[in-house]
Length: 324
Image 1 (cartoon, rainbow, N blue to C red):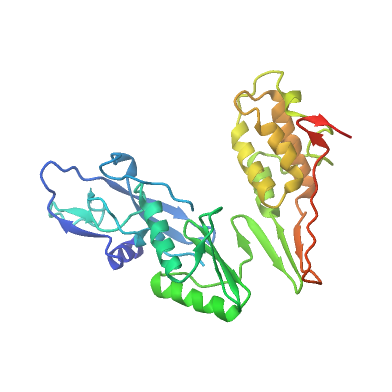
Image 2: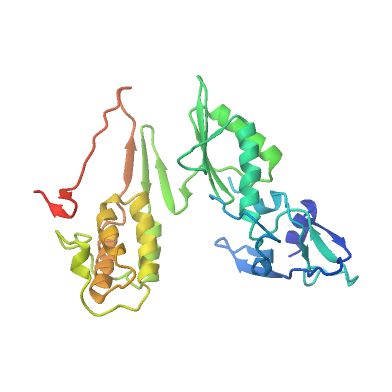
């Protein structure tokens, strides 16, 4: 908690003032947790649910190396007062007038994203129109990509020295953790070799299996019964369990490193409004398939020539009708 307060003071997140008449201060709370490396973490958060739209905040949308206390970098546009944190009050009756965004504020993610975007564009990066959290800078000598997810950065480039310069510029602007070779990002594991990059989500898949008590299930050779369609799962008893809770991580797997389950997940995600027992059994079959194939990898191999051949594959289905 002392470390968190030092960080807040260092970033000049607030100043103590007398509460103006007719103003009501927002409350705050301490959030305590133990991270994976058994490090104890304390985070002071504002109770953002007390904010009033149009008064305490306007825009909140935020498309989302680790940037330490990232949200504290965002400048605050609105005037917001907050009670002094429990255990650190000076008993003067004064309140904290927030000068910068604080964890828990509804606009905090957006303000941080805006702050980062403005800075990275200043370094001549361009924000992709199709994905607001990916930035690229191209020159005749090199190209560099930056992926931003909340407060985590993934940086890749064709020139290590240029990448190092960009990282140092980021360090000069934001407090960042130690730079490491990316072996994992957003549940995706990376393996590098001289001419190949492989991606897998074995650990993520196993986590999903454990969560839904399928770690010791009987493996399946296919994610669905061949020629199944969503209409095959509409009839039957209604299922009232965690259907959507399972569809979510399966969709994430299918859209990242496991395209082999994409059709099956898409098929079963179409009936989330009124899932049936047979549909739930279908989702569990996908889990049993993942049990058997969790070590499958998505491979990107270096081409032997500059002439890249693009191969396109489609399924044997046209509007739900089989054509072969």
